[in-house]
Amino acid sequence: MKGEIAIYILVATLVTYAIRVLPLTLIRKPIQNTFIKSFLYYVPYITLAVMTFPAIVEATQSPIAGYIALVIGIVASWFGLGLFPVACICCVVVFVAEFLLV
Amino acid sequence: MKISDNTKAYFDGLRDGTPIGLGYFAVAFSLGIVAQKAGLTATQGFVASFLNMASAGEYALFTSIISGATYVEVAIATLIINARYLLMSCSLSQKFSQDTPYFHRFFVGFGITDEIFGISIAQKGMLNPRYTYGALTVAMPLWALGTSFGIIAGNSLPIRIVSAFSVALYGMFLAIIVPPAKQSVTILVAVIISFVSSLAFAKLPYISNLSAGTRIIVLIIVISAVFAMLKPIKDNEIEVQK
Image (cartoon, rainbow over all chains, first blue to last red; front, side, top):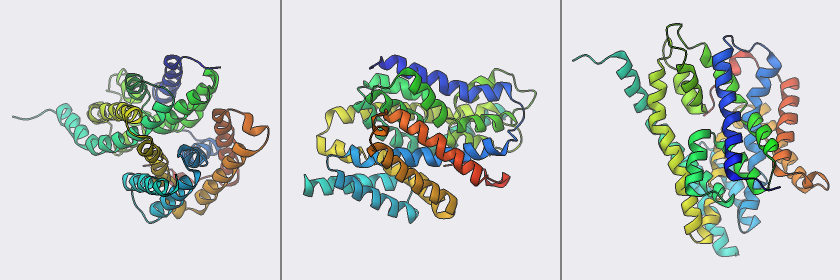
């Protein structure tokens, strides 16, 4: 099924707005439940990890270029480079690798 | 002339929101490359970003559109991926003085992102909503414009360049998850397990037939729940994510 882009955007907007505003307007106390707090703590890391791989090797023309970008991106982040430098490095790596491979 | 506290709060927000906005522009640009693949126009990208203001959430939205997901799948994926805003919204609710008019909660809530929440909660004492509005004044348009520019670039640049740009977002994701993984063995293990399971889900028979959106939702819920049970966090571990 292929839906309307406008409706997709609307659905995401309504859900996101509800998540952001309902606690602020309804709940006046912090969450005490350890499981829920822990669950919400892990979600961002796991979300980004799941979304990054294998998507990064499927986004490029050559999967090998994607793999090289993944490894170099991890190494660059490991050594403390920020979001923007890591992104630029990954882009350059793919560009050069595909220049040689494709 | 003495400037009022409200004016000062607004300009403080404007000042603190500027570096955030510039960072947003870069992230949104790479997000726009994905939005372009999903067939969004620059205007649709602008609207989607202006209304949603969530990198991972919007990425899920765009990939769901690419894979032809149902509206229900998009709703569930958005709910799970943006669930952390629930927690931020809860803690921000403690930051409102009784004197602050109630309607401000609706507008401040709209602007909760990792970064805006981070600077708002870090304010001394109670939050003056105008501080958050100041930050949003610069951050929101840059976020939305970045997405539009990414879509335009995706449409007009040669395929080699677009292919290179398409990993920018993943590079940023890596820069977010790798440093905490270096600090905490638990997060490191969680990231590795996420990588391996995500690859397995994409390749295994039957499971790979599920839409990308559904696979992501299942992986996030299962892996996060397992870690929450086996490695529950202590109170002092809840930090603001960058």
